[in-house]
Image (cartoon, rainbow, N blue to C red; front, side, top):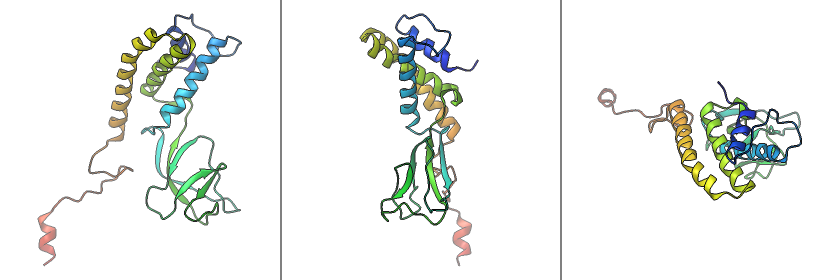
Length: 196
């Protein structure tokens, strides 16, 4: 069964001995704090850039005024080294620090780290985010170093599971580039002979 945001908040609450809630809508300050912590940790974890939320050479097209607005769910972007530009996000738009300009004449292909809603994430990511949120919540709400220490082992294990998921899905190899395409050309004797 897939983990819902409500289930995650209830696990966070159980980490400090609180009873579960049936809804995220209401006036319970502990439930609201648990949801805030879950959202904070969700953003922090996704900001690292995982296989499930990173796209390479994603096209951004300029508007009629030659500016490129950046969607709200972009956590990070990079020009991937294939250009002389130094691109950053400023004022919600793409900015070229090398040219000192917001103006672009063509499509910009960028490596992007996206922010997705908690329920859209793979289970390994939801598990890690939930456990880490539980530890942060325990530290903030009751100041319980025992609860945090107890949860740290579980947090380390769930992060290892997420990293295993990422490496399996990413099919990473020393012979591939970041965008997953093989760039390695092994030595082939016939290519040397053809040169003569």
